Image 1 (spheres, helix red, strand yellow):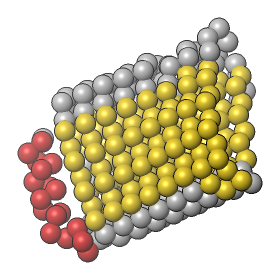
Image 2 (cartoon, rainbow, N blue to C red):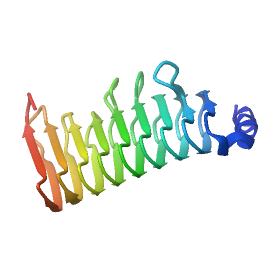
Image 3 (cartoon, rainbow, N blue to C red):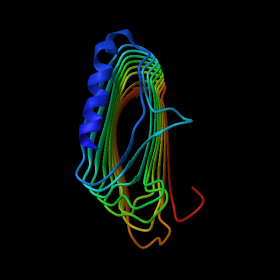
Length: 227
């Protein structure tokens, strides 16, 4: 499988600067290391209709897209002890990622970085099964970016940094153990919504925000249900 993936990437490489390249992946197995670089506009790694899919433990996946209007759509069906990194440099890029779509994703780490304007991230971690020890690191630099991050992993840790104006960040944490969010926000007219639901009410959820902003909106809800 690893040889086939490397071959596919080599075949795509000569056309990377032109854009309009498509990569479709169906991966299963443990110990995968995958690096994908796409340079140009309107490139795709999966689509909403045909997502790239990954199944296995101890995977390391790093996808970099440089340009505008690129798409990353992937599903990690099961991936304990997996690291998934998505990096966008440019404008109007879209990332949709489901970690734990049909299986456990304990000890997973998701890193996202976007530099540019009007980029969109939708990520769900731990949707299908109870998982522990999840982590999300999100860095956004630019304007009018839209982040929607949901973590259903027990004891999820979110760290994110927003630098720019008019960004919309929605973060939801659910589950029955300690969660934490640490955020640094710089810029104006940013809209930040944080929901933490702790179904037992017997352990602590933590939010730490450092904000240097004007005309911004920050809404924090911590509750046992109904956030």
